[in-house]
Image 1 (cartoon, helix red, strand yellow):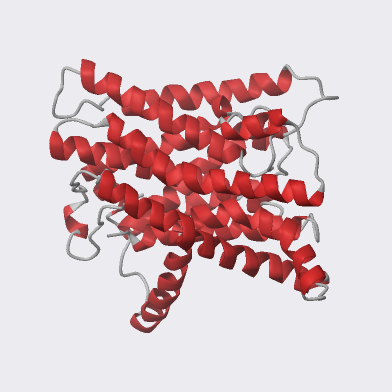
Image 2: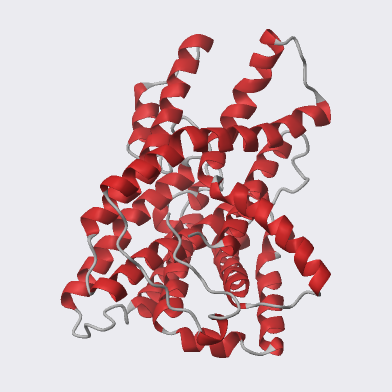
Length: 383
């Protein structure tokens, strides 16, 4: 059973990115902050992936790391490698010349340190490195912690260390790099400069599973909810006030973004019954539609640049239809979403069904604040 609110956040993240990519060529100054959808994905991934491991430990008293890696592999690799195979075939047809090294960088997920084939897959490399590092960290904690009920008590301190280290490393990278060769991708893309966003999700997951009373206390009153909402808006506004290549945003702004998206995540999970009845019913329907899109966010994210690169030319040659202006960008957005959903149904969902038969997820229970159990139970989220 999926969590509708988390799928809505996935939808917001992926649509923000798709719209940003579609409009970047048409109007570079319009919605030039849309790249922040990736940062929302980072926080969500940290929260959800750590939640899988937390939940398994609470239920079983241990974590099957082999099962975790296999299930992650079934989720990530088939859809991604199909994209690379299709890209290779398209390169042969179109006569595009790419080096073997570019493909190898994509295959082994190091394209965030040296450019590979697609400009957007750098974030997949960051997440892939996180999928390796987090289980290894949890393996160490569960093996050597003296507290068997909660071996993850060091997680807040680990996050604080990683957040400080990444902040300092971003500042050092900027000020040690010659302005003549500096590009924002040198800060935006490397794992060692961005993994703090994912670990903030890990920290929130720890609070959600092991210290729910802190979240309940923080989010119980309307005044606290309004304060957290105001801070969330303030933190997220940095991407509008400062350009992506500004030193302030690249050093401090990236930290503000994950703090803001973390606040949005907690408000989404814990705040209920704030809308009038009729408006709540309408928003529920909108949320259902958004949650459907969010279910396919990974495939949409993978395939939407390919749709923008190849589809207009194919349609022009086969159907003799030429898209231009706003029609081209509307096609990019809706075509990218529709094709991503299609590929999700063809590749991602069948593969995950096979995965669930061969390597079923362990039974999980998710700890939520008691006050939310009746109003909005938070089910386990298969990912």
